[in-house]
Amino acid sequence: MPPVITNNYKATRHIYTVSEITRDIKIILENTFAEVWVEGEVSNFRSSLSGHFYFSLKDEFAILTAVVFSRTAQEIKFKLKDGLKVICFGRIEVYGLHGRYQLIIEKIEPKGIGALQLALEQLKEKLEKEGFFRLEHKRPLPYLPGKIGIITSLHGAAIKDILKVLERRFRDIQIIINPVRVQGEGAKEEISQAIKDFNCFNQTLPPQERIEVIIITRGGGSTEDLWAFNEEIVARTIYQSKIPVISAVGHERDVTIADLVADSRAATPSVAAEMVIPKKEDLKERLGILSQRLKGACLDILENFQVTLEGLGHRLMRANPGIKLEEYLSKLKDLSRQMYVHIGHFIELKKSAFLGLVEKFTSLNPLNILARGYSITFKLPEGKILKEVKGIKAGDYIRTRLYEGEFTSKVEKLLDGRNKI
Image (cartoon, rainbow, N blue to C red; front, side, top):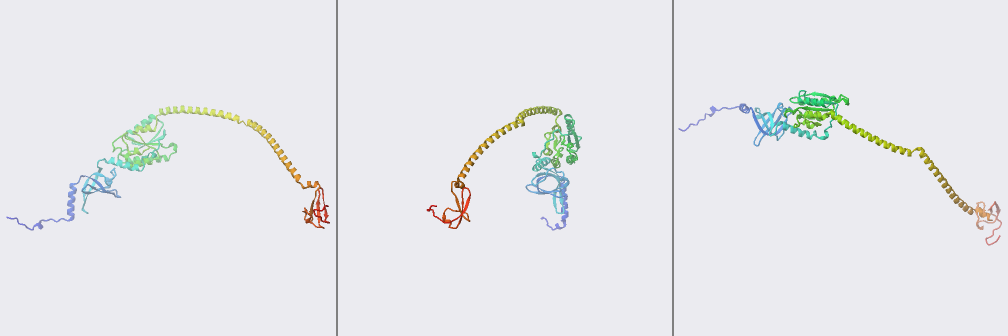
């Protein structure tokens, strides 16, 4: 007998409200994925003012919205950014108002590399770009400082090692210890503040009483134990310190950010003490060597001064004012005699030339011509010399100059040059 089809589905159906279906989905998802590890690539990363991180986790085929609340975000050592592949632990939460689900992340670590190692590499890259590791920023350590500041824990082996070395090498050094936590919560803040305290303390002291070098140190440990010395706040405080800083953190194989930023790095706390204070015996030996070298140099200088002094003495004798005066007087007498001879010759030459000119002027003197019987006649009143009779007429007055004396006469008659007187 064939089955009978009826329309009774309306009597058995259940109609959900949106809130009911969302609630049931929320219960199913949150109970099913209360603890889940998710692998994916960070995408669309952003951080809010409240400190929350928002981003998406994606793979080749899907995208999952994720949230890291500020309390968890503060514990993340590395920097989240787009493209970073991570492994996250958390729970799925459904946001009923919008009908969306998202992953609430409680732990996160980079895929393929430890979180601390990635954080270390990211901070190294950041500080290197800012020039924190450049050699030109490294300051030389003072030689035999009178006062040393040490930042470390009072309960660790590091301070004991340093004090033992300093006691053995040089007891007269003044040491100031600023005790801090060197690992765990609050360590980075205490280390940073201790560096600032030493720098502020120096500003209250005269130069001769100031701390001349700071040693930041702790013994060995795991990467997590040493992490306070890889924090950015510590690196920046070391970089800004006015006092030279030695970083002696962990063992030789351990290299922290503090080691890279500090002015000098010591492989161990004991090596830091050896770097800053030489052995007293070595200083004595060095002082003896320098003393001998100084003595030899002084003797050489004295010998050179003696040779120079003798040379100056000879030069002074040659430059004796009395001797020089006699030489100058002798030269002056010679020059005086030469001057008299030259002046005499000069006068004779000038006298001879003068007499020649006098004789020449005398021969040309008109009065000498008159002495031979000649005379000169002037027409009056203008006094013009007469060379011919054309210039006068009968009745004119003339003046005649003889060698001795002259007379005035009146023209009675004129005769030309062919008539004889």
